[in-house]
Image (tube, helix red, strand yellow):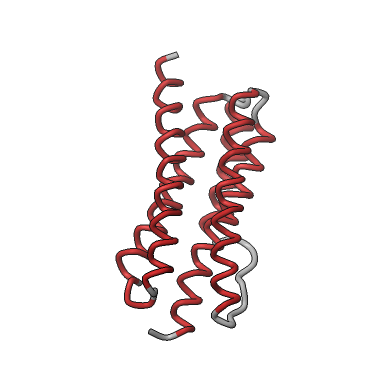
Length: 152
């Protein structure tokens, strides 16, 4: 197991959490609905917790913590801004945008657990699996709300 590869995996997960934080800050600004603002605040807190754990691990390994976001995250935020503007802050559109971002976050964690497991020690794998479970729960909540918004 090489430290550089481990740090790269952890930094990828840090950036996806940065994307979630920025994406949900944007989403929170785009909605007037208090239940969504509360939900997005919860999602931001989840990603801040995950990010802090990942940053601690990168620091333990002597690496430099990634800053900023992934290009795809920037795309998610821009797309959400455009969607919100076009749809007049429509609940369904905002939730669809969030679901799209959650799919990317979930996939990023799944790829790390599938493709990079040899670069992660048992403790790191356990931490990432636990974070994946948290993010999957957030994903499922957004998907459920999005499906309900479709019915309304």
